[in-house]
Amino acid sequence: MLRIASLLGLLAAFVVAQDSDDRTLLTRAAVEQQILAAIKSPDLTIVHLWAPWCSNCQAELKNGGWTKVVKENPNVKFYFVAVWNNGQDGRSMLKKFNIVDQPNVTILADPGPRRGENKIKQFAGLQLSWIPTTWIYKDGDLRYALNYGEVRFPVLQQFLEDSQSEWSHKGEPKLEE
Image (tube, rainbow, N blue to C red; front, side, top):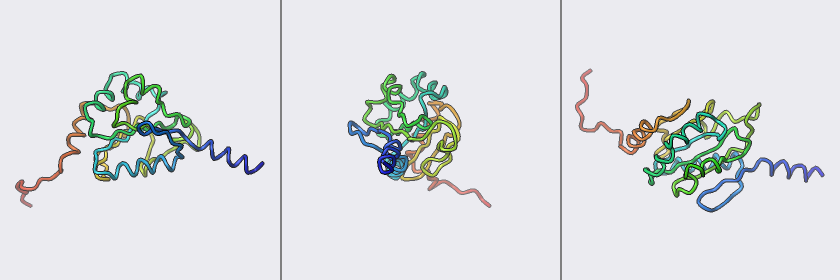
């Protein structure tokens, strides 16, 4: 009986995720590991932490910003990670805005609860205190962190363009000390 209870507890900690058409069971650690592996790639990667019940997250979707940015940046990898949503990935809401079937989008969910002591407060080594939260990575480096509130999509697009540059001032004259 104890073994069955342990197995049921373990199963309750899993969450369904999709990368392309493959469905896999992932724990919180596995979701974070998938994100950590993705952000180490040389690709420009956006990690967007959100929840379908969040009015700020809904506003970002309703104005079409995410749909447009995802479609206009096919070489950027987008990870929509639902948090504080009791393990649900919010796929049905993202589907309404034509985000789910984009080849550069992966949808994941943290299995944790929305409230209480077990509510996730950190993800992939960074503090999580508000949603939506959007992080931009390239070559394993965090280029930008938008941690409090709705994204302004022209600003996000500029951040993507800036993140693809070398961020170098080689050849420019130096200031005299």
